[in-house]
Length: 566
Ligand SMILES: Cc1cc2nc3c(=O)[nH]c(=O)nc-3n(C[C@H](O)[C@H](O)[C@H](O)COP(=O)(O)OP(=O)(O)OC[C@H]3O[C@@H](n4cnc5c(N)ncnc54)[C@H](O)[C@@H]3O)c2cc1C
Image 1: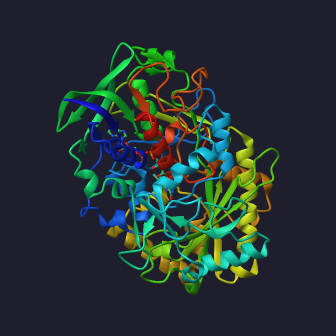
Image 2: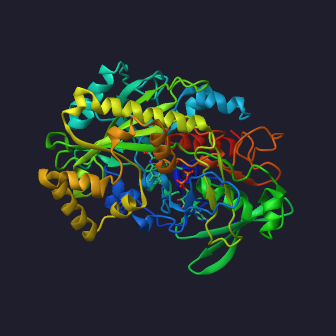
Image 3: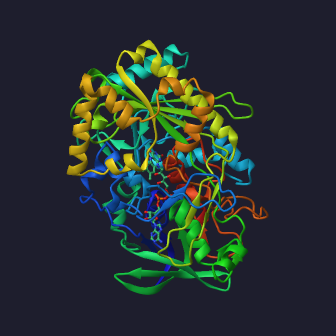
């Protein structure tokens, strides 16, 4: 059994590639995914739900053992493990993510081209953004109308009270208002584009790449096979030519042959797969006892994400999300920090109208604060050659101090916005927060968590116990009004607590064939071997100023053309 293309990973990118490559009936295509399938008519309700946090934290759809370390690698400092959800499910991240559909700034892609990704300037990637989407609101040369991926916006009159107040505060602070952030690239606040179909309830339903690209018509193609529940262990080689993959299916290990293997396992598992297969920094592979097929120093290097934290308000009843409303994020703000050499549009704020699925989350709303053009870089290394062992992931989150400084300043801006009269009247109390391990525990839907958070919500809403709840339970030892005026303490808090936005990327960077840090060439072919491509978030030369799902889909669309020689 020999395939023309084996795609490893049916995530945001892999589902796109399976569709586009199998559109040519002369190519036999096999899509392998470790997680469960989500075929038409059998998509779980929690995946379809316009409120995504239930899917974010459903461990049935995760790589359970994956842990990351955000802090700087120094000396023999031990690995400090924190959870970082990554999807193990058809559609990958697009099946569990927040559905924000953002392209980023033209300068992001012009930077890709300048870094050696010839053919990936904004002008050159725009046709692929357009090919992916059907924008239900806008048309013209900046948008697609026939793509599989529907994108729309929910307008201001339908927003809950907190988002409307945040908008007023941002306007009063002097920010402009944009209609369409995917086509207007200045600073300003905007209704958030989401990949969501306006059907199945007032807030519509999620559309993942599995739903959009692996619909019934595509699945009926005779030249496409989709095998869920298959763990791919490594790519196999004859000399420097990839010959197929070793897989485990139903407990049985076997090799499947292919003319071409495409890795779309995401920013952690694609570099790990390359290294397990003998492609990576030669010394590291030797330490792991892995025979070197190609010594590529860049594999696993350059890891990026968008550092984030949140300013949360305990809000008055009138600003809470109405019962029955599911969508919790409706608007965002892109702005320029003005810091030194940082480019325009480097920062991002999101008004989040619900702090969690549970009764306590219903009382909370806030501003999510994001460094959208970070400079820090981390790495992914193997912890063991065993395919079942997760790699060791170091973000080195604030290795570039510009990222820390801008996040601290953004907390100050957010505080100013929350203290403006437009917002302050509806806020009972305020505290800084991140996705702590405790918050992640409570984010799992369970009766026990509901009961715990119901009790907490009652105590927080009850005036006599409110202060005790805030000072002892919710934000012990941290008073935001004091913290904001203490630069050292604020910087310390941000450095210690900030986490990533689940936008891991850039660990198999695309670049010129003679760039020793590049892993794939601008056609997404792995440099130094034959018959092997990578197409997913890992090939981005630097993380764009955007949530990474839509950019990843664009990468897969363009990679498909390159692989097919179009
Ligand atoms: C909780 C969360 C919220 C997010 N919110 C947003 C958002 O609102 N907007 C946005 O734009 N982006 C968001 N993102 C980021 C975005 O979803 C990711 O950048 C994107 O999904 C990455 O796509 P990918 O194809 O590179 O990897 P993935 O989508 O992760 O796909 C990789 C696939 O490969 C499979 N795989 C891995 N290893 C193997 C193996 N050995 N064998 C077989 N299969 C394997 C995995 O199971 C997975 O399905 C979010 C991500 C998460 C996790």
